[in-house]
Image 1 (cartoon, rainbow, N blue to C red):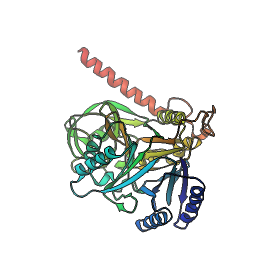
Image 2: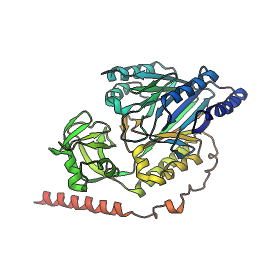
Image 3: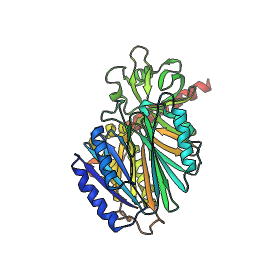
Length: 426
């Protein structure tokens, strides 16, 4: 497997990149070639030009991609244009299917994904790129997860330049859809994949019960208007600044034994309900959660070392756009260390998808790292790593100590535990 990553600011950049790839494929045999397109800026007509140019040079190539809240190239944020990540596989077969979703077709789409996966010979992994904001993703994933359980499944939700916008798209071989799923299958005995995730957000305060929810709109927690929780405990009001103020405080739920974050995107001022990025089961126990820089950094470092141990030939990072907003100008501190392991590309998403146990779970405020390679694991360490510690610039370190936010959160949680203990003693 050979990986090429390019960052474009205009259509004119594409030809030069394709010429470099063509020169490589003329000298080296390959089984399949897969182009990932991630774009924060390019419009549909520009994407179609790129699709046409790729297929003119490689008629059998496959193309998969998505709009984004930011692109990742060589471990850094690409804030304009488009990133083209090209995977040249020596022995792995890849296929791309664009599934457009009409009204109430989510169950059918999920079943088709399952059928395609089960029918693919020597399949090792499947990637899902979904317009999460325009359809009921839970129905799709619940049907898709019925497929054979030895297939690694990962992916992400299409996003927009402004994270709260709902107009997004996914990209297939020859088409584009604003309401659909792109399925990529990876098949071959010599293909290996490794997927890890990091959050870093921790529960805050007492358990709350979801007492009323309809689809993705959460109306009540503990029989009270859901928005009251944010105004009561965090002094965050249901106004035009609601989303900006809750970035550090998503809702944490437990799904199939895994901690999963859900981000409220907007709050209705009339009934104090809010719209979630994905649904939560009624009756579920949830918590407010908080983002602590030290904990987030530690979780990501664990993933870096796990990816390093796998010795990939390419790394894909699908990270929530909320993490980009949280870190602001420090965001490259999360993604940069991966570039010391292998070529890195990816995008900032509206949701992150990965199979965990028997379930395909839609995460939010999460970073997913996907390592790929062909062949046995290399005995030597990847270039640039070895036994050397991955360094973070001094100004980006969080002083290696407990931050104030974690100390305050610990104080709140201990007070709550003592209160509950006191109530039980009475």
